[in-house]
Amino acid sequence: MRILVIHGPNLNLLGEREPGIYGKNDLAHVNGAILNRAKELGVECEVFQSNHEGEILDRLHEARHAFDGVVLNAGAYTHYSYAIRDAIAAIRIPCVEVHISNVHAREEFRHTSVIAPACLGVVCGFGGDSYLLALEGLVRHCAGQKTL
Image (cartoon, rainbow, N blue to C red; front, side, top):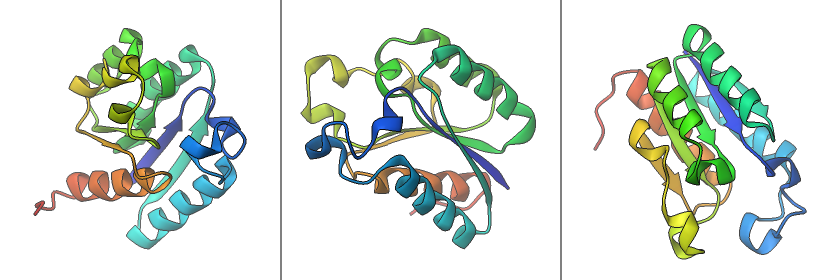
């Protein structure tokens, strides 16, 4: 099983950008935790980060031929990128939306996700662990395992 993790805009600044909201760990630390958990789960995992919507779209399109599922933190694109939403729907592999912070406890504009309806599920508010929870759920889903 192969899983792609996509980090969207500004996530390259983890550890520097608003550490009270996004934590003190940098992206390399988060990616290390993701790759370690993937190894424990017995799955291949690739991580990718871009600040550019078109690059995220290209990776989603490529994923349909190379991966069994996607974990996506689309950052601010979550709230307005119909292009990313349409790409998720088009690729026909499961995608889990992730956010480090609890977007529902923040500014009003963050409460709406245009990509969520195209996703298998959404995990938010658990810091970097949100990625690990999303990865575990996606792997169980792709393996056809029943949920609790």
